[in-house]
Length: 333
Length: 270
Image 1 (cartoon, rainbow over the protein chains, first blue to last red):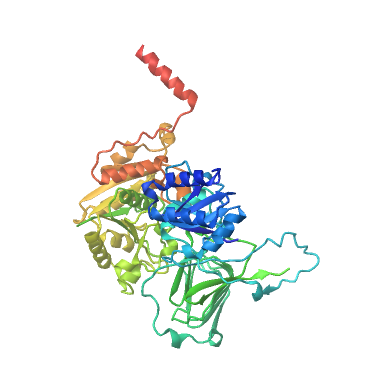
Image 2 (cartoon, rainbow over the protein chains, first blue to last red):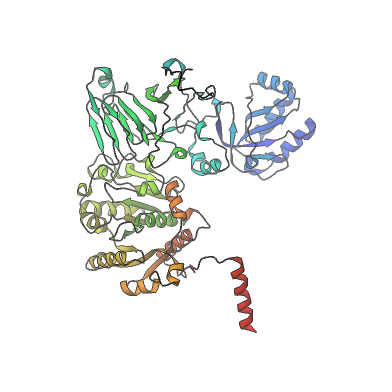
């Protein structure tokens, strides 16, 4: 299940209205508020049956107020059909937290983050690209594994899924992120782990020539814990058996592999090799850098110390189509 | 615009220089002033952690000095307040990577574009300290009511004295515990001020909230009800030239005691 956020949007809850007339009346009373201008409106329609023409006029009403209809939430089949034919996005709202929803009679409208269960790509604000891990983990693995029977740990590439671009919005982050977390709006697993940093013109020159297969590069093998302030720099691949604590830096021309917890900064392909990868038993780098792409860890996951753990989910980060993509290795039972 | 360059120093480590820098910087930025915080503690940087900005740092002060980036690129904007910017220290280098002249140059450039430049000084009186004070025209000496911290503060004040560029040296007394002062287990504010003979700019009570705010990367001035936060906001006001009375640090009493007090006052009136 993916979750997204709509910037600059709010929910209007119309699910309590009894008929279309009442619905339109309630909606227009909310829409008259000057603050609605330029916002994205998400309608909660409940079980109201709306014909295509009715939905169209509602959409027109919203647009006449200089607002935009982001999506609707409905339980009615007819409304759903109308929405599909009109190309209106249907989504499931998960607003059991009271602050996030406003009833129609509630005239005070505030900017609020809206939680959407289905991703609505149209709403993605491209200001800041980011990386999210999509993997249905643990849901299937509910039964404890008996250690007596001998477990075969198979990690397979096939079960990994690609990460799509995500949604975080600078605006939301600064003002609402903490609020949202406090209100339980975001659960940590569902938000993007890394957010691309805008570093301007840091992209090293001569990318193409440098992008040789990293397998052909020599590898530095280190068996130690990297502590804060320690830097490893090597013109090839780096393999570290141990943890890399926050404050440490690993800079390699090729791949970086940490057999342990990666908590510091990792820069793979530092001279511009875009085929380089960063992999770790626990990928928790404060910053992930591959060639000229820099990503910072999301603030909500920003724990300033190394979190020791016995549970590892090996992950691998690489560049695909100009984005940093993280693959999670899943255990196949 | 010519801003004020204030160095926050102490001599002794662990008395709260970095916490003070982060909080005063945040408080001034909240007042609408443009503030740059410079972390000069090369190799042992912490200011970014206290502000929760570690994950945003790409360039550091050493990159600026060694001309790998422009000064503007190295300034990291605060998450909450765009008026506040951080120039981080390099974690993987040591104090010798920077010279006093270079730091002065950076301070001079930054004060042209900002109202305040706050320099977080490393502990000690060596190169790092000399670097940090180089560009400053004012100093805030942080100390705690302990003999060792006071001795080191005294030493620092002595070192700041002959520096002509520094026109004002003020004292910030940190981690004060009124309950211990009452029982004579801790030196009182007056005692410390008397020993050090410089004007007080603030008294900050010991507050467990500082620990959580440090861990969260969110300075305590951002929490409205914390006493330490209020004390730091007052310090900012005093830096701005306002006359703010010092906080009554008596710990909040229990309900019964409050009632007793009321009765005592009534009796006195009668």
